Length: 306
Length: 294
Image (cartoon, rainbow over all chains, first blue to last red; front, side, top):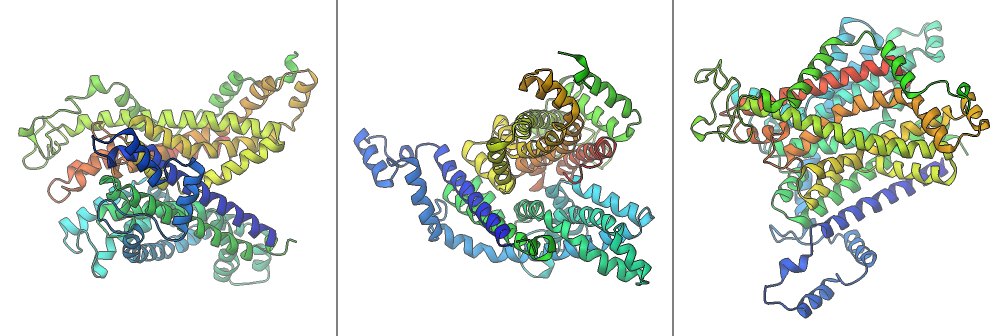
C-alpha cells in the first residue's frame, strides 16, 4: 500500500510540474513582453536592460524555476486588469465556486446513485429503460445550452427563479442543477454497470442463498462493492466537474473562479489566467490523489499488498 | 513470405466488419448522414449567406411565431443573418473539426500504441508514463490557456484537441497489441522472417481496427461537444466562422428577448452527439464488448 501511494504521489507531482510548465510557457507564446512595455523611442540597450530587469535574459529553465518558487509562495503576479495581486482576487472568488460546486455534487450523487442502483436491480424494466435513456441523453447534452434552456424556462418564461448572479438559495437552484447534470449521467451509467457486475458475483449469490433480504443484498452487499469501480473513474468525473464549473459560472454570471478565468481570457489579463489555471489544476491533482488514497484504503487487494 | 502467416489483411477485416454490421441502428445513422450531407453541400443548400445579413431583418422570430416569416424559417440573429443557413454551415465546421481532430489524434495514438505494445521495454515504460501524465492533466484548463496564448483559430482548436485526445488511443491500442503479438500468426510471421514494420502493419494493425472504429465513433461526439464548449467560452473557433457553439454564445445575452438564436444550434449539437454516441455504443456492443466506458 505504501508503494502504491508513493507511486501515485510521484505521478501527481510530475503532473503538477507539467501543468505549471505549460502555464509558464504559454505566457512566452503570447509574444515578447518588452515590446508592449517599451515606448517606440527605446533603443536596443533599453530593451536589453528591461529584459535583464525582468529576468528574461536568463535560460528558460531558470526563468521557470523562478516562476515556480514565486508560485509556491503564493506570488502569482499582479492582474493587468484590476491591478491587484492575482492570489487576492482568486481567494475572494473561491467561496462562491466552492458553494456552487458542493451543492452540485450533492444533487448529482443524490440523483445518480439511487437511480443507477435501482436500474441495475430491476434490469430490463421500464424504470431501467427510462434511466438509461436519461443517461444517454445526459452525456450528449451541451451543458452551456442546458443552462440557457433552464434559464429561459424557469427564469424568463415562468419567472420562478432569478436568471443570474449570486444571492440567496433561489439564485443557487439553476446553476447547481446545471452543474450537477455534468456528472449525473456519467455516475449513473458507471453505477449501473458496476452494480450489474457485482449482482452477478458469487458472494451476492451466497448472500441470497443465506436468505438475506433482497433490499439488503442490493443496497449493502451490492452498492458497497459497486462503489469501487465508480471511484476509479473519479479522474474523469473531476475533469467534468471543473469544465462544468467554468461553463456554468459563465452562463449564470456566477462570481466564482471559473467565470473569472473566462472573463480574464476575454480581457487579455494573462497573469490572472495563469493563476486561475494553476490553482484549479492543483485542486484537480490534489483531488485525484486523495481519491487514489481512498481507493487504496477501500480496496483490500491494495491495502494488504506488501 | 507465405500467405499462411497472414490470417487477415486490412481489406478482409473490413469485409468481415461489413458482414457483421448488417443490421445498423437506422435513426442515428440517418441523422448523421443528413448532417454530413448538409455540411458537405452547405454552399448549395443554404438559402442565404452564413456570414452576411441585413440589419433591417435582425432578430426575426421563427416562421410559426407571431412576427416571423417563411423567408427565414428559423429566424434571424442580431446581425440579421439567417439562422437556418448558419446552422447548415455550422454542421460543416463541426464535422471538419471532429474529423480532423479524431484522425490526427487516432493516427498519432495508434502509431505510438503499436510501437509501445510491440517493442515493450524502455520505450513502452516511457510512453505509458507519458500517457499517464497526459490523462491526468485537466484537459479543459490546458485547452483554455493554450488557446488564450496562441489566439483563436481553426488550426489551434484542432491542435489542442489532438494534444488532449491521443493518449486514449495509445492506451487502448497498446493493450490490444500486447495480446495480439502473443498469437500464433505473429510468431509464424517472425519465423517467415518478416520485418518488424511488416508484422506491425500487416499482422497486428488489422486486428486493432475494430477497437479503433469503436473509439473513433465514441470520441467524435465528444470532440463535437468539446469544440462547441470551447467556442462558447470564446477560446475555440474564431468569431467570424459559423459554428454552433459560437451561435449559442451570441444568443446567450439575448435569451430573454430572442430565445431562437441559442435554441436551434443547441438542438443541432444534441442530435449530432446523441447519434454519434448511440452509433458508438452499438458498435462497441457488436465489435468489442470488453471495451467499457471510454
